[in-house]
Length: 578
Image (spheres, helix red, strand yellow):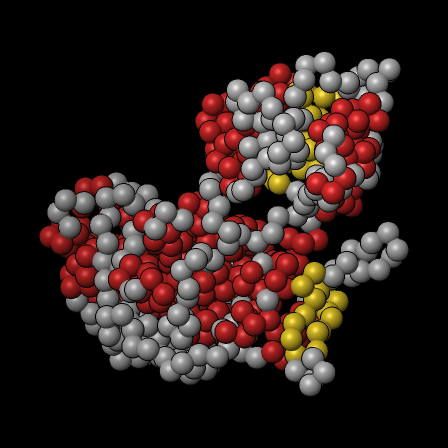
């Protein structure tokens, strides 16, 4: 349930005309009172003999009783209370009781106060009510309305429990501005899934992912088809910007522009520029190994995904073991990884990845100030993803996409846990929701490469399969039986054989992969170990076909040298599998 205290007004009759009127686009249906300060208050919606003026005069009576010099200039208080879309439709009686609780909690009409303010609750839609009140009490004093917004939010949390409604989390003032009701109605009328404000927020956020300069940022906005207005000082310095969708127009036919700060607090130009002014890159949390060798047969997108997976791994370490400022920077930069991944991934995973990035945006902001510079590796990885171009949904491209999504899932869970420990309820919930979208994207992305690896495992000779089973029993005796019962065991057996053929000791790498995080809570332990082993052994995510030909998504030229040093691929994984 979402309560919202609106700006004070000076004309009671004006607000009543809106509440009882048809709405801006005929969206108000059957406006009527559900509760008021007096059970006999006139209802212009249901009583043919009552007028707006009758209700206005009664509401304003305590105000008009004061000498003109003592009357407040803006005496009209307005609160809307909206149910969540998935909540059941409440009756008039239930909405009336909710209205009484709200005016009591906010100080308009405390329980048992016979000299409280006059108020009325109007319902003109199934999912919300509006409460109008005049702030002068019957005894001539003004109501004490300090922190009425916070009080309404606190009461809403209690109402959700009492009525079995969707339970929302207490905000901390860092959320992006919600679309207004007019923006929502406009989106519905025009057949948009999201409001113009939300579409612009997502487009700008994806444009800024991995950028390195003002020019590149505005070039990306223009390439995305947005209309741009820049705010320039007399000195010629750029101060800010506004953007608009080409087809989002007001009643006069002019584009509706939004400044970056109105889209989200971290999308103002000064906040974006903070990402481009970075100190020297700090050392990684646990030190780094020498650079991983380049794989000669991977495409640019596949190579960028492997590097992004390593960068995400390093970010996980910092989130779990770094100080709050550096962890906050990693979580913010993680949003850029998700945006870049959604922008460059194949069609079959794009929708879930876009939703993951969309909801994770809320997890990227809190009152913990991000210490910039510690996110350089992650932001460079996002930049590489965008510059590498779109990836195929199959072959090495598809397999490395699954590998990165798998690690991004870990990062989202780590972010959720980090926020939860600091009682950042909205951010923790957003990160958890993003993880669910990443889970769905992973299942789609991993289906083909895992099926290929399972087929290779099933073609192993009985002697080799037995050798891998004995190795598993030796290294992971407590989990061996469960792993062999999983569908992915054949893929893990094939990977262990690939590790041996590459010249590594499978027992050492398997032991190391298992130590990186507990595995009992994993949905598929085999999947976890396959990706960890293929990364740590520097194997192709999807090996060559049985006839020796390369899988789709590979090439015969080496990828470009990395712009930054890849993250350590053998340090402890600080997160756990879903």
